Structures are given as structure tokens and as C-alpha cells.
Image (cartoon, rainbow, N blue to C red; front, side, top):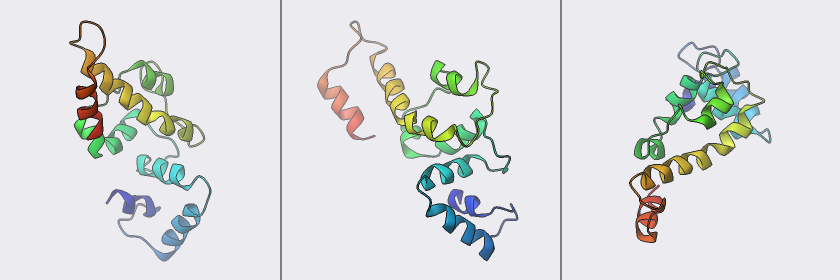
Length: 133
């Protein structure tokens, strides 16, 4: 359903041949995966996305179901403003989305070491946690 919503450019609930061909053209572009990912977040077609638009999309992925992503972290505030009210433009999205996995791993690691006395986890716990994600 999420991918189909990208092709439904007119937001009519169905995909016309023109809309299908437009998405096909996008998919042939060098940065197609960024453009499609942005469109998945921009469900209303406003040309910008909010932090909530982004969170709605990533919250349905398996990795983000297993390890919660803190949208109130300083990294998200860097991209969406200190109050998380800033709207992100398509030209800003590639750099942002490329760094999401790194931030997600950082947050997961922080969650694992929160009860640690020395700020570390043993190799077995690390391997068990990160091999399934």
C-alpha cells in the first residue's frame, strides 16, 4: 500500500497510466531511491515533509519496530529544528535519509549500554542484538 501511494500522484485512490509512467521515469533517475522515499513520506504531496511524516513511514519497518527510534533526539532536531516543526525539502532528504541507519544504530547501542557501569556491552550481547537487525 505504501508503494502504491507513491504512484497515486493525484491522490485519487487509483493509479492512472500517466501516473504509472511518471513513476517509471523517476525510477530511471540516478537518485530514484531518494525521490521515491521522499514521496512515501510526503503522502499529501505538499513538497516538504514533517518529522511526523517521516516517523509514520519508518515506524512500519521491521528494524524500527524492534528498536524504537527517538524522534526527540538532538540529531532529529538538527534536521527538523529544535521544536521539530521545520519542514524538510526534497533536496535535503538524501543526506538525511542516508544517515538514518547510523543514528538508529547509535540509539540502539545507547539503549543497550544504559545499565552498564562502564558504557560498554560484551561482544556476545552485541552480536546477538545487531545480528538480528
